[in-house]
Length: 240
Image (cartoon, rainbow, N blue to C red; front, side, top):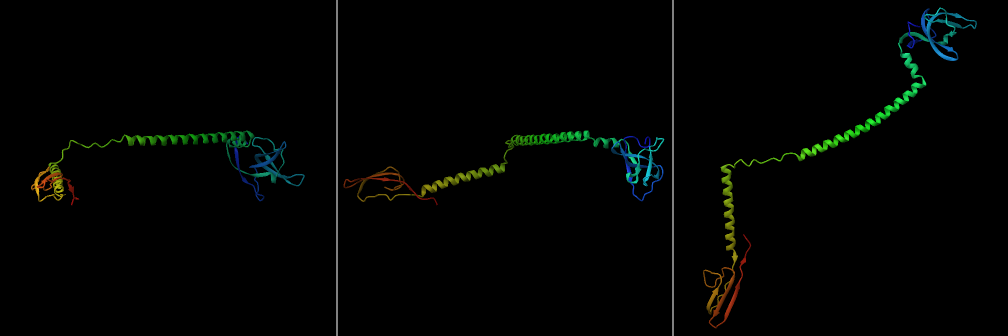
């Protein structure tokens, strides 16, 4: 059918119904038995006649042929009428229908599957490495974070310094007063004073005779010659 339809083109036909009538020189696609194989041709329809069997025979002819086709074509052999064609697309269809195409298609699918598996593996490893690197960078950033340095050159305002000095002095006076109160709150023992004391001596000085002002001892001698030694211990009461 060249040059109208180049060899290897993909032909698109419209279905042919029983009620449709074919006009002369209409391009049709039909089935023929070629050396025992069913093939499809696309030729011009030229005429129809009733053959010796009583059936209508459709005569077809190629574009550059000088006679009708030798194949006997009947109504049931006609597939459709020509609409358009796609150049070289028929070769692709023929190749896909061949055993070699199935073999190559299987090889391509295997290659794609291996590529997919390897790609996923490398992608997971790369993601894990990136997460580990990000974690290390985060740890380094936390460790390298500068410690804020307090500016020690700034002098404290005089008002604040005076307030702190006064507070420190008040605390010191308070401690001293508490120490004096603690000393005054000491419980003193009742002094031993004999009516017939001739001579007496104690180790801790006091304001009165034989009054116990602190720890120590008291030595007394009576008129009867009795010597008495009393040991005094300082006692303290709980702080108020």
